[in-house]
Image (cartoon, rainbow, N blue to C red; front, side, top):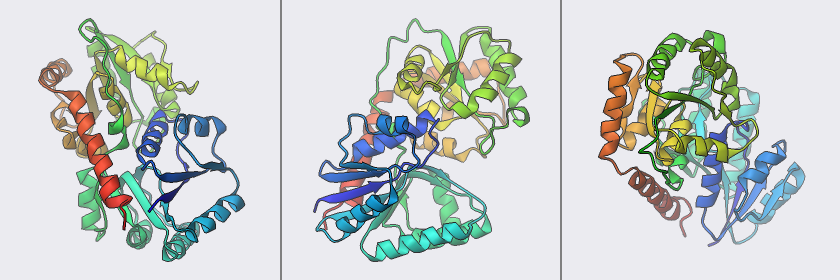
Length: 358
C-alpha cells in the first residue's frame, strides 16, 4: 500500500543540525510515499532548504487546506502517517494545550492515522509532563529512540512502547579530504543543555583552560553551527584571546560549516550534531562533556563504538594526552563504515517496521 506522510517541521530554525537531520529523514522515506509539508509559520528559507532535491507532493502554509488534505488521505486507500521531527524532547509541565493536542492525536489515530517519531531522545519529564507522555506513548504507532540512556529512563517510568532507531545525522554520506597536512582544531560549544546564557555557563573556565592548552600546538577555528551559541562562542574567543573570525550559520550556508570540518584535524564540542557532522567529514571528534549528565551525546557515541573519545569534564585528564588517545583510536577505525552501517539500519527499520505493508 502506498502511503501519505504529513510532516510539520516546527523546530529550531537557526540550528544547522535541525535542518540536516530533518532533510535526512525526508530523504529516507519510501519512494512511494506522498509527502505533504505543513509549513505555517515556518521561515521560507528553511522550507526551501529542507525540501531541496527531495520529492514533495505539497507544501501547505495554512491550516484549512492542510486538514482538507488529511481528510482526503484518511478516506483514500493510502496509509496515512503523521511524522514528528527528530531531536530531544524534555519538559517539566504539561499545560492545557498539550492535553488538547493529545486528544486530537487520539481522535486521528482512531481514524487510522499512524503517529511516528524517529531518531529521538526522550526525557526527563516533570511530573505533569510525564503523565501526558505516558498517555501519548500508547497512541504512537512507532517510537524510535536513539540512545540507551533514554531507553533506561523510559523503562524506569513505565514507558515501554519504543524501539532503537539511530540518529539521522548518521545517514550523511561520508567524505574526507586529505587530513595528513591538517593541523587545526575546530571548536563549537553551547553554554548549557537548556540555557543559552553565556555569562552563567558552568564549565567556561574548564573549556577555556583546555582551549588555551590546545592553542599552544594547534590553530583554533571557532565554528558556530547554532546561531544561539554566538554569544557564548564570542565569550570563549575573548577569554582565550583568539582573533580568528568564527565560521557561522548566520547566512544559512551549510556548505561553509561542512567545509570547515573538512579542513581541520580535530573538532571538540559539547553539541551532538556538531560532532556527528564533523565525523562525517573526516575530522577526529572529541565530545567535551560531563559524561554522566550529558547522556544524549554519551549514549550516541557509545552506540557507535566511540565512547573512549569522550573527554569527561567531570573527571578531567591532560587534554594533550587525550588528543593523542583520540588520534590513536581513529588510526585503527573505518569511520565510513559507521555511517554506512547506521544508514542501512535506518533503511531496514523504515521498510520492515514503520512503513511496512500490511
